[in-house]
Length: 215
Image (cartoon, rainbow, N blue to C red; front, side):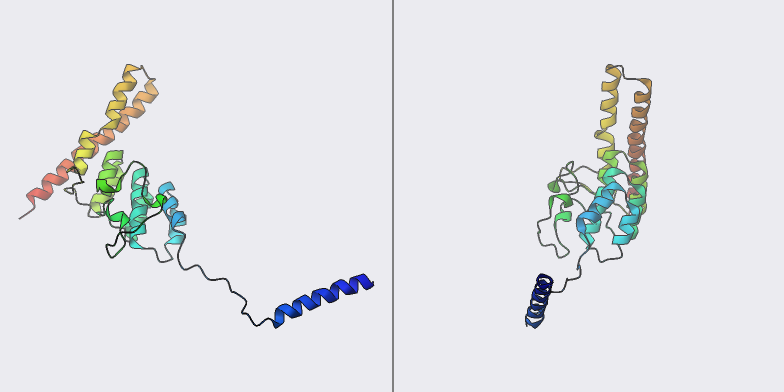
């Protein structure tokens, strides 16, 4: 019994000492910024519901642009549509993705540098990336949102050039044919080749039309 009282009394003393301490008790600070990595990852993985929740917070314009590039790379049409509606700039290129809103150079964490297939100095736009990756519907969405078909990267290539010249599926198809791949695999690869060809035709038409409409 005495032991129990002693312990209780000790606890009371400790609580009283803590209460008499004049130093303010630190309060948990509210989160002032949304989890950027979660936002970028959600765009990459096509998690529309996660993005919708995060968009209720203030998201920097450049983070939206970077998220758009991630969604474009992976061909997530619903995510691309959501980010465009949220104000992502379809004409921002990979060099701008590493600058803040005032144009000052900033250091972005690795997960914000879009994807390993891109280099910042390439100055590629979302339209170029969509064309290179063979995402037909994404290309159509970007064009409808005002993506510039005549924009050029650091090597002077347009989205049309990426669709026409960088036809990776065609090279892969030829390799598969040499290796006598199964009919199912060849059929899937032929569909990918068709996507690239469709994009090239679409972009060629858009570029010619826009040139004709120029005064």
